[in-house]
Image 1 (spheres, rainbow, N blue to C red):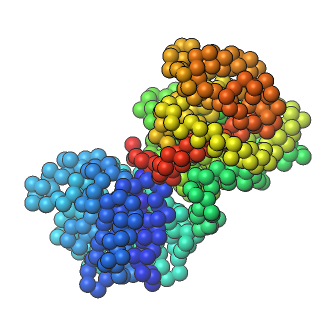
Image 2: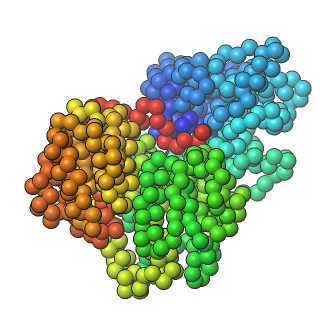
Length: 610
Ligand code: F6R
């Protein structure tokens, strides 16, 4: 969704803002803008479309100054256009905003009645007018912002530049992320950490309801009652290089190739295969030394993270025999879920900022459930809300389509499964040692699997003209099939659906016609024969079958039109491997079509509004 950057220090603000906006591009946007303050006043440039359009304008007339704010906008209220692009300005008040003002229509009417003239269709301009009106009564900018916020319902992260105070940036946060970056004789603020990494790795995330004042040498955070707060500074280990493309054509491809390392780093320090030990942060505190003090588990997540949760349910119920429900956060938050003290809630989120997942987590906490989050971003809102967090050490994920975060989430879910199975007395020490030994081999299997990229590319490119695809699987691979279809839809704009193979006869088989591609996930397990029958059924109706199966499965490879081989591992771990060819398949189709792979149309990296 929208991205925010603010700078105050000794550098040319325009350069820092543009650099920051580039690093926020992955969040998804349709217009961008900056405002810089100097001795002559406020200079603003805004443009519809990609950053290149803004940069072209800046080339002609570069705003100079050492303080400024910038924004990438993902339209919610008002079409993508230059006049709706941020920053918005009324008098000397300039604002960039992420989030949604729910009572904007009502406030707009009131402000128009009072004589305010709106220049955009955005809800954000309301903030400018409200703050500007308050500043007619007082010269205290902080208080004026506070008064304006009191009138607003909704979510926001806000950076205000006031033309009459050239050394200050004002910040406010409620429900949408905002992180302060502390440098030497310079300070920054951004909606997301990658925008800060070239300047500092010392960050302080703001909490809901907080206001902050940033100068080049200081920062002060106040709670809603005006009380000054002292904050711990977090040191981020991500490097700027981790957020670069590193020679790959797209971030998505780079992130697919990072998966062996991601799994390795996610396992690092958490498993000791020799002794059968698992060390999961915060888990002993939450569960106690022995046993499992909850009756049920409720997983909550959205999109790809929800697919990871579905695989997790299969694993946990199979190995640990604890009942698990997997809930779409957007539904859960408005349901009346049957959870309470007896429930362990596991929210899964790459960003830790997804609005629905956060709201669902707050609901779970209000019902006294305990929360163990799986999250990729240190210090994110989700991590701060949860009782404990198991981080996926995937590093920054820039491609909008989630890849490495999914595989990292599966890795953590598998470790949780083993921990629960051990605590439930369902797994002997020997079996645990075997499992830990097997999971440690996953990075090398992934490396081997990535060597089939050229073969997968060939298959993908032969199918670029197909207008819809079916993905079929059973058991823990059914959610992987859903994930494969989602990847294809979101980056190549082709219709794709994932189905539990046994459901084909209940309707979807009507879609099969001559040449329709069906991607079948066919690991060797107890349902192997069943899915072979499903393949026969679709083939008999003309489908073009691409099977993904065990490397040694000659029978399968001879039966189908295309075959992708998966290295041998324990059956339960196979979802970690089967996900990868599906990512590559979607990537190569999209790349061949020439879509914007890293920033597909209409999508945003983290969905911080409902
Ligand atoms: C798809 C994708 C999304 C996210 C979803 C949740 O490729 O990335 O479906 O998985 O928006 O995001 P997080 O995990 O950040 O809560």
